[in-house]
Length: 429
Image (cartoon, rainbow, N blue to C red; front, side, top):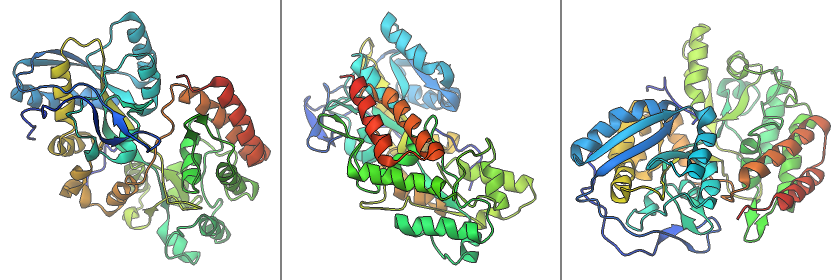
């Protein structure tokens, strides 16, 4: 199975169904009502010139794919501009302020609330079927009850573990409960590993590791009135996460850039990451002379506490900006890029995992057992709140988690501080 380009990150329908504007079958982020959608589009005779922005490897590969789209829509011209990830956010914000936005763009899932709050995005047409996407992925497009855009590709996080070393420690499989999971990490350490598991000790993006444990414990990060960090379920989850550092099962000051080397050597036999790490650890092991390393490790779901196992869903969305002069053509491109056949072809080109559930039935994704497990995990994966202020609140959360890991701050103290900061920041709506 080719995995050399796994990232962090066909026949198209002739026209979108001509239905009236209104609500579709999708749901909002609180699950109480279907998301509001925009006016339907007609793509049968769509025409126009589209400027498209895409980041990273997607921006480099997309021109080859859209050449097939323009073969089917000869009256539509597509110009793709690759945008570096490190400057993308500011480029978008500046373009929104200046009124120079592209027609279509790849938008990071955690940016949706901010850009929708700036009144920059066009609501998703009611003629696009939201039910075809993973539910958690679709929820990343919903801001204040309205869907803006569609999921393009997805990823989620699972537990990577050395199955051979786990068996030596007396574990034939990863426990599905959080108490048993910690016992396994401690057991592997007692069996000779330097650390039982690698967990991010706070700092940027640590919420992506902590929240899956919280969601799997029945915690929620937001309600109708705003953020909800200091609930009993969240506090319990943060205490659980912090206990790995307090009990010295996880390193509170890990060296940078050693995940793959520590994993292949067995020094740290477990960590949590996305599907791109499969190729990284296997390539590293091969370079170290460890042939057949793929048989020495496996992946498992986030262990459950008081709820169903649930991980973080990431990836990128496709959005159409309100200032486009070619709305029908723009949404025709978005619809084509999210057809199952197109998604499988895109995966073959870039290894970006499909957001459309039916695309996962293709042999290209079912043939690899580990990859197929990521597909199962995506069915219950969740997104953080879509409030415009999430990026600021997440930074505050990360800072408190660092105090938990490195200073022994309690979950109650950390989440009370996070809640206070979140309330001060507000939702941004």
